[in-house]
Length: 179
Image (cartoon, rainbow, N blue to C red; front, side, top):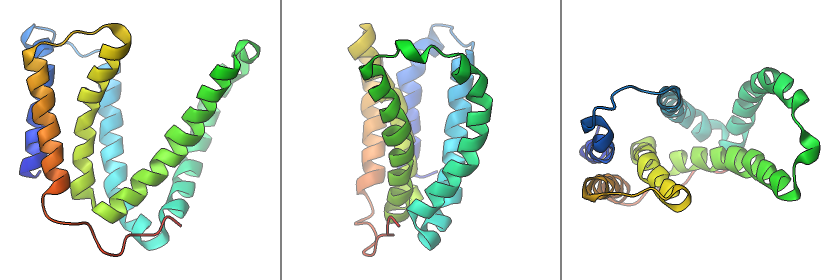
């Protein structure tokens, strides 16, 4: 772990410290699921990088989507079959299309390409942005309030991620192609 990553991690811990210091040590199912998701995300990022450099982001993303998508469709099929699709508005359908096409496929495609261009050491610290971004979303949509400690934690996190992104010069001269 680099110094910048350690700084970003400390920022996240400060950001979450009000929960921890308040005695709320019990992890919920959502907390554990996010921890598992972050771990799998980190693993995928490291494992996919050499494949993206060799075969291109589109090919790697196609195989990852095929291998991961088929089991997810099988698992979700009963719920999807029983879902009330007829009551979904046009905005709901647009949101579903956005989640499937842009957030999932295009997002992962760009992530693979950025890892090939910038390198995992620079992109991995971006995962530390999840807490501050979730905090901003909570502030925007749930009227969440933040004190000085949470703001300090977010600032430390952002500084750590910025150092990881901008220290060490420019990225490679010959970026990996998307295809």
